Amino acid sequence: MLREQAVTAFKERLFRGDLRPGQFLSQRELTLFLGLPLAPVRDAVRRLESEGLVRVIPQRGIAVAEVSLQFVRESFELRKALETWSARRFAETGPVALLDTLTDEVRTLEAEVAQDLTPELRGRVILLDRRLHETIVVSLDNRLLAEATRQTFDKIQLVRLVHPVTPDRLRRAFGEHLAILAALRRRDGEAAAAAMDAHLDSAMRHAIGIAD
Image (cartoon, rainbow, N blue to C red):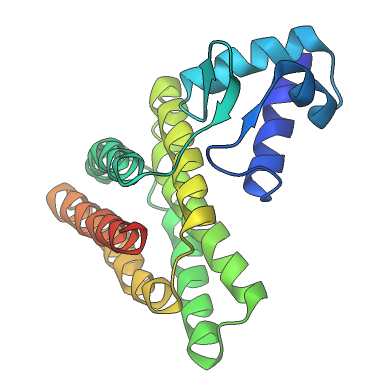
């Protein structure tokens, strides 16, 4: 569907840095930018606005979301609400066999990063971070929860584009991830929720500190 193609193309260009937070574009400029017809681009803009990535401002155009302190805080607070519940639920009913590979990958990357955090390794760490969190949520087989979490991840990705995660923060996240995975393996819902909350709270305070 052309609308979905337009949404995907917009996000790819946004997260690649081809657009700036707060940047204005007209509908015509956006259609040329994406190389797609006006009708699906207009539909895509409505979808992107509902997800909080753009704003339509009458007489001015389409504005890419601003990464303000409020945007950072609200995005992480929503993520905490969604994923803390998900961690508790996964511990009760989730397939723990999924966690073995993730645990091994976290430990392997942790060892590699301890030697040298190259740009290639940094990219792998961020991809593994998202896959780990998505695995917990998606495995619960709740379409609405998965979609809400995906939209929140998109906002966090925009935050990281503007305020990149520091090497020290990336290194500390390994231990936090392993604590979450260990609690899930034990089927300890309260410990898993607490570990997830602590991990996301640390990430939020770090992002707010950089943004400030």
